[in-house]
Length: 297
Ligand SMILES: NC(=O)CC[C@H](N)C(=O)O
Image 1 (spheres, protein in one colour):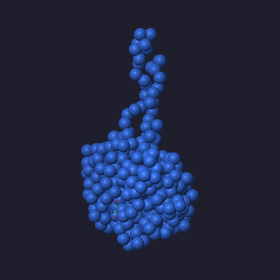
Image 2 (cartoon, rainbow, N blue to C red; image 1 turned 180 degrees about the vertical axis):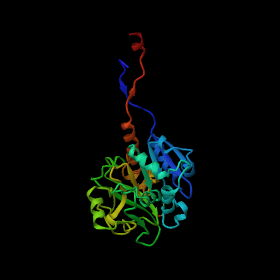
Image 3 (cartoon, rainbow, N blue to C red; image 1 turned 45 degrees about the vertical axis):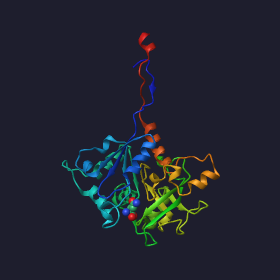
């Protein structure tokens, strides 16, 4: 309308967080989005599978960590198969909807068990675009469940909005099957060339390492996280949603003493702030409400 200036669309960013079947990190995931200024809705997977909730009403689809289906057949395998093969009344699988969701320019994030689901499904790294598994995650090289803090370096080649402006971060891992295996020289070379290995485990000096325990699982390329080729699908083994406040860190008291004006935000929160700000910046501008002077003119 004449005289109206486009303005920022302040509609809140909507994050859908799936739960059920042994997923157990949905509350932390939701807390992360809320702190980042988004609205977070936790929904049981069946609500989505049966068509009561549509993923298309949301901006970001999230797969949290946990022990879905008790890690039977390998972590994430059963859930991935459910998404790929289980059809709703309209004859569509949830994977059909997720493909459409990504094609519409929306975002998907998987943490730990959620990352395992995205990898077993083939949404990561999805070099071919055919959504078939290209890499896998398997038992840690240590043969044990690893529960420790790790340091990560962001691959500067990564184009993912989730990682924009982040160089490194400290976050906890807690997993038994976090070892990324990339079979085939070509697949490995392409992942590296395109910067899809977006996060690497590092030593105290920030250099990527395969040395245990800095690298907790022996992953190829020391890889802790992957994106797809669009950068819209992102997954990682460590838990950024478990480091939202400085006080989540076991060493906070000493650090605060050493640096009294240290930020009280945890490193993990940046990822959520990033994606929420990105979605907000992509919203089409809306017309500004008319002012009194416009009416009287
Ligand atoms: N924290 C998690 O999500 C763990 C994932 C999976 N259950 C594993 O142990 O590898």
